[in-house]
Image: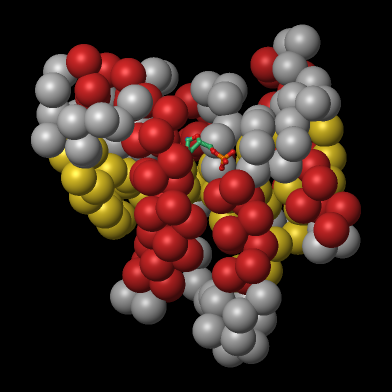
Length: 193
Ligand code: GRF
């Protein structure tokens, strides 16, 4: 487990691939006095990821790592993480599967947020599948990352009620609002143990 010592905050990297709304909420959280983390670098595989704008707005170092070759991409990522002495990785809508070796190397130090009540609805297109199955509730989960997709130890979950009129898009929006609160809460939880 990563330790937060005294006034030294845990040096954290955020990996993202898209809009970066969770990235934004984590950056904002990191600036709070009570936050145990400081965000040193944000990394994306996608040159078009909108989340890059938050790197600019908040003046946080950003790095684009293209994934033409996964092994080389991860090698480059590891070198960035070393350079910045990163002790915690938060996946926030990162659309690449991380290799077993990488996960081993950062065992217990990688977190992810998933838009369902895990272990239900692992993988992609969760909201569509949830609605097609006439579920009454869905939600979001923050968990540790292990070598199986969306299967690591659960840290926190938030349940969200599904209305009959909810489309996958509407549900995604509703759940995202909760995700933005849940990720910081999960980080607080693991570092106040
Ligand atoms: C979120 O729903 C997150 O749970 C999932 O991907 C989405 C990312 O959204 N892993 P954003 O880029 O943080 O807005």
